[in-house]
Length: 77
View 1 (cartoon, one colour):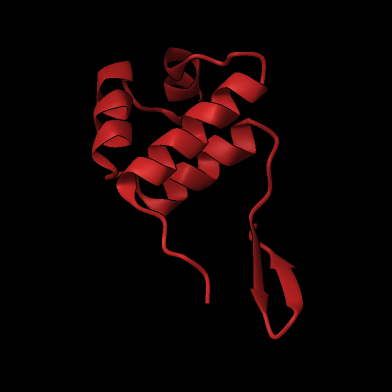
View 2: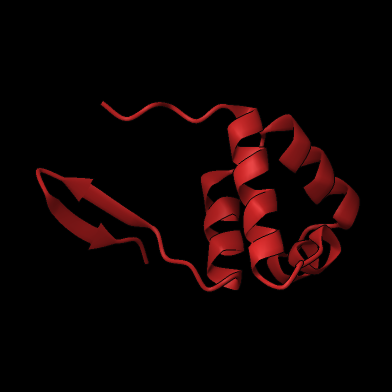
């Protein structure tokens, strides 16, 4: 069974990805996904980002989301 990610886990995971991708700022990411910096920062810290917002963030950073069932993977598009 996969451990569920907490709000804090998601926050730390995304912040790590920002650093790994050339220290990308929250301001730059928020502009790319169409949120104000304040709204993005508030949602990121509160853990209230929608799945589609997280998907946009990951896409902006060059990542893909894979889902897996019974050993078979599909890419989220």
